[in-house]
Every structure is written in structure tokens, then in C-alpha cells.
Length: 360
Image (cartoon, rainbow, N blue to C red):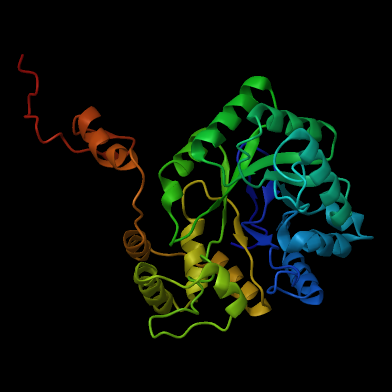
């Protein structure tokens, strides 16, 4: 597999690379990240290797990330049309302005116009709601997104970090009202963050929405630079935000490093390869800050974990899911399927029952 092994996003015909270039590190405005020159170089390298999917947000480095991308494509309209650029709205860049952010009609239109100015383009390919706005009626948000698509300034719609129940509501309302459908979800997902498997993953599968994981290396914890001997990376600015791995995290990191050593790959590449094999996952967001990290991430495209290696990673990272996930996984098959095999799943018989359960 390569960056040109394109996948479609959910219920759409939009083709994207299996790794999407995340650009939260474009710009040094937050005290960490890459210079403009380094950012431009990484963007060019990604495109030269056949990648076509770029992700940003209005809040990333206070708008500088979008500006760097826009500057790169200035004067290259044909190159811009060959890539998929997604950006996000919700975050306010205007302290004190109650309509500076969120998901209401006024703020959404203003945020899109500002993003288009920074990106120096007439349209964005995917417009993502970055977070749930509990003060905005979902109908207003969806209708505005549909209007923006009809205006030609947006091509597709995605949701990021919304609760599963709100995502399902938005998807169904879009379907019933004839609005532009939600094609994809951006959610945190990695060996160290698997709780979306309780609700979001089965919902995405049922509603034909792609999952685009962010933080696939969990703030770098799965990159190989952390280990139990106490050595930590020299990244003081970022560490003040993310902290370091816990003892439970290190249980996963230990197995990840063992598997990586066995197959001669980096822990980062193994973690990304594992994630790429998960249900509903389409394109993974990678956000390297150095060229060597970027190359390391790309190596995941060539890895194939065997069943035993995947099982070890699955088992050590098994999450504790909210009710009723454990009931659905264990009790429900025993209660309802009588010990039969359905769609390849062999179920167990409820232990309280005999071979002939009906007695009265």
C-alpha cells in the first residue's frame, strides 16, 4: 500500500489517501511546531509522494496553519484542485465575541469566509464541525452546512468529536430533510484510546460514515520515544499540555515495542498499521513535526501484522467500555441465538438453559 492506494470516505465518492497530512504543527505560534519553511517542505514532500488529503482547522496556530497552506497553493490552481483540503469550524478566534465561534448560522458563514481568505481558495473539500455546540440547534447547523454546499464553497460535510447520540441525530436529520449527508467522523483513536469502540464505531459502520482517527500515536506516547527507564523526549513545551504516559499506558507501550522489534519496524509504524486495520477506519491523520517522523509514519503503509501480533496488541489495549457494550458483547449473543452460528459468529448457549429449555 502507498499514499496512492486511495479510499473513499463513507457514503461518498471522495477519494483520499490512507494517510491524511494533519497540519496542527504548521507554524510556531503556540510555542511548538514547525517553521513556515519546514511546514512547506513537508507539505511538498507529502504531495510529491502521491498524497492528496490535507487537514487543518481555523484554530490551528491561530489561523497560521491555514495561511501556510494557502500560500503554498497560491498561483497553482491546478495543483490545488487535485488535492482534498479539509478545515474545521467552531473555535473562536475573537475573544469577547459571542458569535465569534460555535455552530450557528452567523458564525459558521463568517468562519468559512475567514478560512477561505487564509487558504486563498474558493472552496474547501470537507468542512468539519470541530466540536458539539450545545447552544446551537442541530437543524440550524445542518441547514447552514447544506446551504454552504449548495453555494459551491463546501463540497462535503464531516463531524469531529461529537457524542455518538448527537452524531446519529445529525445524520438521521440530514437524511430525512434531504440535507448534505455526513460522510465522515474525526475521532481520537489509538492503542491508548479505544473507547469509541463502544458507540461510535458500530454507529459509523451502521450509518456508512468513515472514521478518520486523530492523535493515532496518542501525543507521541506510541512513537517509540517513551520507555520505562525514565527517559523522556526533550519537548518541554508540548509536555506541559499532554503530560507523559501512565503506568497503564506503558503496559501497552511495552508490547508495542516488542512487536516492533520482532518485525523490524518502528513502534509508530506498528501503531499506525494496527489502527489502519480497525473497522470503519479510512484515512488516518498524521501530524509529524520532523521529516524523519513523517517518513517513519509512511512506513506503516507497508506493514502487515499477523494474527498473533494483532491479538497481542488487541488484548493489552482492551478498553473498558460504557454500558451496555459489555452486555451486547457477552450476554446478548447467549440470550438470543441459542448457541448457533450466525454470520460466522459461534455463540454460546445460556448456561441456565438445558438442551431443551421449554418446560412450561
